[in-house]
Length: 558
Image 1 (spheres, rainbow, N blue to C red):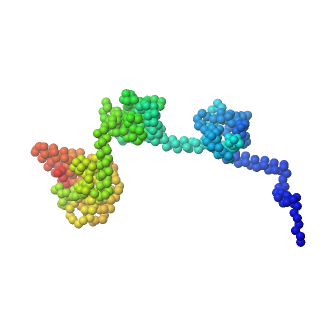
Image 2: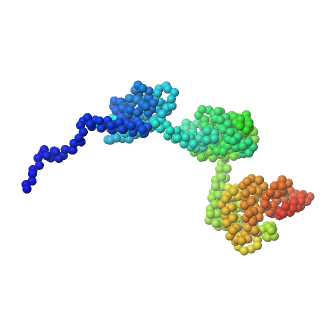
């Protein structure tokens, strides 16, 4: 059978798409239905769509636009780009036209360029209605020259989302109690103020104001009254500031203040004015009027710091050394070269002490001071740097008691943990000697220390009976919950308890009745008084007699 030659007409028929079966009218109706469906979907999602011819400035909106934003009937401002932007609030930092133009100026576009902007819209001019936060998202298309020709996009109202964002920002930057900016905001303002003072060659002042005795206010009047005192004090301080000054809730009962363009010659007058704002008249609270005082530590910007942390640290130093009397409630930071060098030396020495503890190059020994506990010889732990440790300034540190040095450097917790390890290791060895372990107040509140003590004592049968824990009278007899809990915990483990620096006063003996103590170590001042006059020896005998009546041993300091 011969192949049939395919004609050009037949080839054209083969390439022709199949007929849809719709007439032009049918296609128009289908498109109308599709458009109607799109309008319904847009309205249901709370959006409105637009097409903007940038050259002619004409905007075509979806039908639901006017109803969505509440435009009155007959309003036409939204039909032009420029008149639409006239409805924007002055608070708006972005406009659709500005975002598109700025994007067009950065690079030449050959296709659609996405954009997004957020602005505040006032749909009805002069009406007492809330403005609308609008999120505007779309794409603009370039003409032959690459400039914006038209744009297509959508808008949605985001008032609820904006409110949530504002609430989160407020929680992040403001203090809930006083409604003042918090420390986070303060540091931002400090950074700006330091930069501004440096660039303009001016001097500003930073202050930390601390309210006195807020713990007493809370104890006597209750925490609600204490909170009200903080709120009222913050309001009074804010009322005395100039328009560009700043007051923040810094921490606890402290406020941070930035006084812009406040040179040294004006700082004491300004500080006195702020102190009087708080202390002149009692603060009104639900618990009645409460009178408070305050103190201020100040420093100057940028003289006393180039960063917020440095400025805050120097103001804190000034605050710590302020005198509490009426005539000296303001202190300005002064950079003392000798003090700075001393602090640098302490920092280096602290690093050496920590390094010695970490590398276990601390020597431990147990000395017999002629003391006993439950009939056994009582040995006291001593610690020092190992001989191979070379201190930076040997004469300054090596002659100091290791425990006193660590206390001065703020390292008591680290040293106490190392001391506990040494005592527990000795208790694991057989013997009848008892051991004294003095503990600082900072370590007493450390749960890790207590857990290590309990675990270590459980490892040896008679360890607890041969261990005496020594703590100061000031803490042991304070009656504070943490002191009571600690003493009960130590007693429950079976350890002895020695009260160090015991004053032997009637009040101290009275408080001892509720404390599970075994030994009292008399304060050195008591012994100096006894030794100053032979007739005072009878008083010492009386103290020992009273202690014996309470089943307490008495230790005298060496």
